[in-house]
Length: 473
Image (cartoon, rainbow, N blue to C red; front, side, top):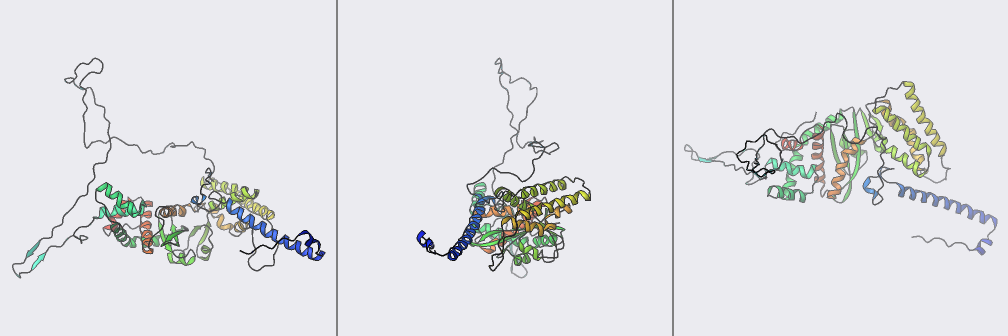
């Protein structure tokens, strides 16, 4: 580390002429300015957390704060709402086993009641899981000797029965379900199956089941990709993931009924082109303004305003920028009108956009451009200036939800689809192999889409293991 220059003593300063003192003061002012900017940058870095920036909640550490939702407080009371369809355990019409409890003696006077006829019966049922055991099916292929030619002829085993002893498709489906859908690590997947069934599979057996399903669902995932290409609107996002101890990027493209995952070495448009959705996409793409998305010009762009609300909150709380709070409230009010389908005239809609422009001008006035330093490279900007520039440059993408009611206010769809993938990383730490990561993405694309389309996950896995995976609609 470079040693700081020794400060000049008073007698040394007294020996300087006026010109030298002026040079020294100017240099000190420049140094103070740089130090103030660096201090502010570090203070901003410390002040940012999940409630006022794009940082995930897991990065908050021990400084957890009381959660404050960006949504407006609802008018309805907490709990079940009127008309909500509840889920209640009901009496079965026919019980598997009936245990009759007789009254043998009167609890009041002590008389014997064995010969007295019952007035009525009160029923109570207990729903229980029966003891589970594995069922072993033995296939015997008969071998005969042909009396005509004298050669031996053996019957064919059913398709898929290829080993002396193997796990059936039902148990393999549960292996894949626990490991890929419930995100249990390999060891815990084997452990729970051993506890439940008394037969603990090896980790290699679980991996083999995963690979079998991944191969079987490739055609289904191709259908998902084609349906996404023809969708009117898609959500895109990406997040870091660890593969073989290295940082890779997990990309997602999704809709309310479709999900496609892919792992790539890059976060950039190179990875997005590998996903093969965006290059020729003609509809709307909702994203978080990552620069690579703007390289695709055949589609229309809409930005996630949940990110903007957090950034505006940061400016309001830590820079006391009143325009930021007002702009956040304006966006929330516009969202409320869209969510409730509140009828507004074209004049009223234009007035809201004029308020948007007015608040931007207010912000630009409060945050004038910094004077040129004469240094090479891009000039530095404050967080407020950066956000204001985005709000002005990408106004059409930010207000897309306001102008078209079919466009969502945020990118929560893609973020929800990524959330479970981040949970997998927290549980397992990383993917040990790249092929394992690719296998996981194929299976999760298939299962996430199956869940969105109302299918039973175990049934969807069994269908894949029988070489008949469902094809999304």
